[in-house]
Image 1 (spheres, rainbow, N blue to C red):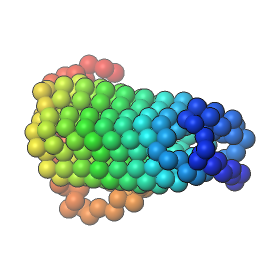
Image 2 (image 1 turned 120 degrees about the vertical axis):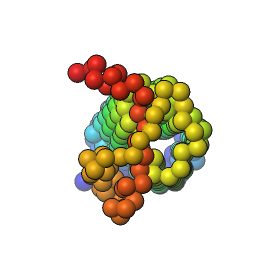
Image 3 (image 1 turned 90 degrees about the vertical axis):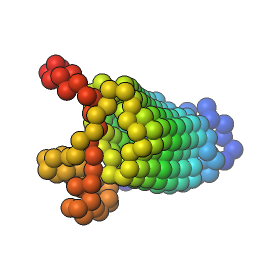
Length: 225
């Protein structure tokens, strides 16, 4: 594997973005040292490359990516993985509001807590939150799977149209159009297949604790083939 280290300490955000895109064409893995919570890291990247960020990232990390595998060793700011099409974003810590906003595909894994409006207007893909999520999680959700292992606060699934929200912890309140049921055995099997590769080693009893939140008008899902 060809690796290249980028020291971002004395770079502004535009220079860092340009440097990442230039080297992503020639290397299998880029290691970003001293990211200093800069914004827009790896924005718009379309190469099949690994990006390791040794520190915290600011707003819009991995926004609009299509293919890369981005791993943040600490925390991320608002709108992590915004509008990503494919690829993977892993955050070892927590993130701010709007994680996974508008994603079309790919997988986002946040091992800690995240802020409000997680998965807002997401159209596809998978978002996994290892901790808690804030208010209006799944706001205007249009597709995909949103999985929260911790608790969720107010208005979960507000105005959800399609897609599925799974919560293992407590749900403070549901938003408009949202309905909550217990998961089926098939749901639990799918959740185990999704979570196990990311080292969420839950027991069979844990999987029975998940609740499934969808649009109350189930006809919406059957109308689209």
